[in-house]
Image (cartoon, rainbow, N blue to C red):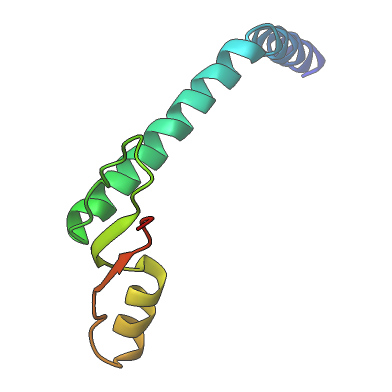
Amino acid sequence: ADRALSIELAAFDALTAEAVGEAEAIRAGADALAVLDVSAALALLSESEAWCRPVVDSSLAFEISGGRHPVVEQALRRSGEGPFVANDCDLSPE
Protein backbone atom coordinates (compact mmCIF):
# COMPACT_ATOMS: atom_id res chain seq x y z
CA ALA A 1 0.00 0.00 0.00
CA ASP A 2 2.86 2.37 0.82
CA ARG A 3 4.53 1.56 -2.50
CA ALA A 4 1.32 2.27 -4.42
CA LEU A 5 0.88 5.56 -2.58
CA SER A 6 4.48 6.49 -3.30
CA ILE A 7 4.03 5.78 -7.02
CA GLU A 8 0.77 7.74 -7.06
CA LEU A 9 2.34 10.75 -5.31
CA ALA A 10 5.32 10.71 -7.68
CA ALA A 11 3.00 10.64 -10.70
CA PHE A 12 0.93 13.45 -9.22
CA ASP A 13 4.03 15.56 -8.53
CA ALA A 14 5.29 14.99 -12.09
CA LEU A 15 1.94 15.98 -13.60
CA THR A 16 1.74 19.03 -11.34
CA ALA A 17 5.23 20.13 -12.35
CA GLU A 18 4.38 19.66 -16.03
CA ALA A 19 1.18 21.70 -15.66
CA VAL A 20 3.04 24.48 -13.83
CA GLY A 21 5.62 24.50 -16.59
CA GLU A 22 2.86 25.04 -19.14
CA ALA A 23 1.01 27.64 -17.05
CA GLU A 24 1.56 30.48 -19.53
CA ALA A 25 0.35 28.40 -22.48
CA ILE A 26 -2.66 27.22 -20.46
CA ARG A 27 -3.45 30.81 -19.48
CA ALA A 28 -3.14 32.00 -23.10
CA GLY A 29 -5.45 29.20 -24.23
CA ALA A 30 -7.97 30.07 -21.53
CA ASP A 31 -7.85 33.76 -22.52
CA ALA A 32 -8.42 32.90 -26.18
CA LEU A 33 -11.27 30.59 -25.25
CA ALA A 34 -12.86 33.33 -23.13
CA VAL A 35 -12.77 35.77 -26.06
CA LEU A 36 -14.28 33.13 -28.33
CA ASP A 37 -16.99 32.33 -25.76
CA VAL A 38 -18.03 35.97 -25.34
CA SER A 39 -17.93 36.58 -29.09
CA ALA A 40 -20.08 33.54 -29.82
CA ALA A 41 -22.58 34.45 -27.10
CA LEU A 42 -22.89 38.02 -28.37
CA ALA A 43 -23.25 36.76 -31.95
CA LEU A 44 -26.14 34.50 -30.93
CA LEU A 45 -27.75 37.29 -28.92
CA SER A 46 -27.37 39.83 -31.70
CA GLU A 47 -28.94 37.39 -34.16
CA SER A 48 -31.88 36.53 -31.90
CA GLU A 49 -32.51 40.19 -30.99
CA ALA A 50 -31.94 41.53 -34.54
CA TRP A 51 -29.17 43.87 -33.41
CA CYS A 52 -27.05 45.61 -36.01
CA ARG A 53 -23.58 47.08 -36.07
CA PRO A 54 -23.44 50.88 -35.99
CA VAL A 55 -21.73 52.79 -38.76
CA VAL A 56 -18.90 54.81 -37.26
CA ASP A 57 -16.92 57.36 -39.23
CA SER A 58 -14.66 60.33 -38.53
CA SER A 59 -17.42 62.94 -38.72
CA LEU A 60 -18.99 64.63 -35.71
CA ALA A 61 -22.42 63.30 -36.66
CA PHE A 62 -24.25 61.32 -34.00
CA GLU A 63 -27.50 60.05 -35.44
CA ILE A 64 -29.45 57.05 -34.28
CA SER A 65 -32.41 55.75 -36.24
CA GLY A 66 -34.67 53.23 -34.53
CA GLY A 67 -32.38 53.03 -31.51
CA ARG A 68 -33.08 50.43 -28.89
CA HIS A 69 -31.79 49.92 -25.36
CA PRO A 70 -31.13 46.20 -24.80
CA VAL A 71 -31.54 46.28 -21.01
CA VAL A 72 -34.76 48.33 -21.05
CA GLU A 73 -36.13 46.29 -23.94
CA GLN A 74 -35.54 43.04 -22.05
CA ALA A 75 -36.98 44.44 -18.81
CA LEU A 76 -40.17 45.51 -20.59
CA ARG A 77 -40.47 42.10 -22.22
CA ARG A 78 -40.02 40.30 -18.89
CA SER A 79 -42.48 42.52 -17.04
CA GLY A 80 -45.11 42.21 -19.75
CA GLU A 81 -45.50 45.99 -19.95
CA GLY A 82 -45.51 45.97 -23.73
CA PRO A 83 -42.93 46.29 -26.44
CA PHE A 84 -40.05 48.72 -26.42
CA VAL A 85 -40.63 51.62 -28.81
CA ALA A 86 -37.51 52.32 -30.86
CA ASN A 87 -36.34 55.94 -30.80
CA ASP A 88 -34.56 58.26 -33.20
CA CYS A 89 -31.93 60.65 -31.89
CA ASP A 90 -29.75 63.19 -33.66
CA LEU A 91 -27.11 64.97 -31.58
CA SER A 92 -25.04 66.05 -34.57
CA PRO A 93 -23.67 69.59 -34.66
CA GLU A 94 -25.84 71.91 -36.70
